[in-house]
Length: 428
Image 1 (spheres, rainbow, N blue to C red):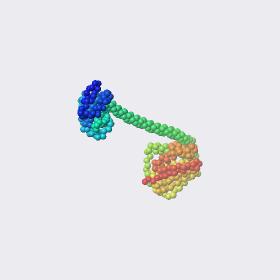
Image 2 (tube, rainbow, N blue to C red):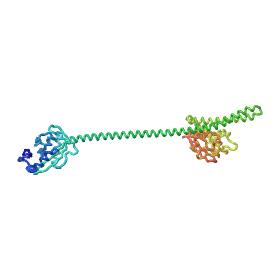
Image 3 (cartoon, rainbow, N blue to C red):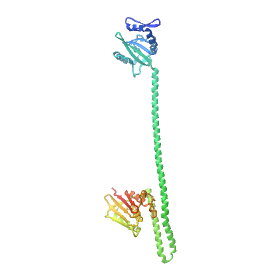
Image 4 (cartoon, helix red, strand yellow):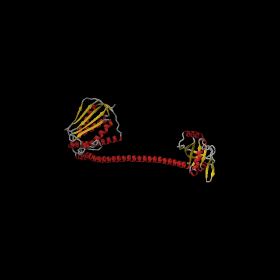
């Protein structure tokens, strides 16, 4: 079809040639006024082509949009409007569309471009429709310049990217700040624990100082007073007949000095244990021989109403630091003698992997409340304040047994006595 516009009055008419579709011509003539108004004044580019892609009509908006003069596009193939690198692909698409034409937008989801007369490209959106006339097919394309739309879309994409980046940065910043806050809270909590521990240790130290001052003032005053008074009395006994009285006071002085020496020895032992300077020197020895020597040294501590009664099945060789074990048993047995007026039982039992040593007295016993603090330094039971002592005996026993890798257990009941059980574990 080849249509040439001519001017008749105020309208453009379609002058048909012998190969022009008459039905299309008659349709356009019958609707000439309405067709001109719609076609020429439409704010969108409109192209009419035949099945060979020849442009039959173009409205003024399309001409202006594509950079052509009026009627300049008529008779040209629509491929002049296709970018060079897409012409071959466009031919394939057009052939497929001709086989199964549907009224639809072109290139949904694609970035379509049209070529102007000067060769420049610009983004477009194209909608296609078609109709038949006397078994011939015609195509109508509606073309919109979307340069501004694409620009806005690009700006929106960039803005969205910026917003997403800002959100990511914000999330990361929030995460980092949250982590920093969490770390700060953890440090504060750790510092609070350290502070609480420090305060607790300070309180314990204050309690220890109070106990020490109370114990020292009592335990040192008694023997020192005895030494002073005995020394003063000795000066008065100048005659030979007074020798017995002098000897009595000399013995009191010796006993008091021995007591002071024992107290100082306990203080030194605590200091060595606290500083970690006590070393283990194991040796092998017969247990019966060790116990016999120990009991000989403890005989002076026995009174007329009490003895240390040994229950021992049979002799055996054992390996341990016997000097430390001696300190443990001297403390345990001397405490038992001190807090009881009856016999004290020392029971030794040998098993395959350990030796069990029990020290049982029949003395004043220890209350359940006091048993919670028995192994603390300078602690003395509430019912033992009138009995001399430093409050270090059980503390030293506990520390020495741990040093040997053994175990300690204490059972006691008020007015029924106390039983101390020591387990010496065999070294592998």
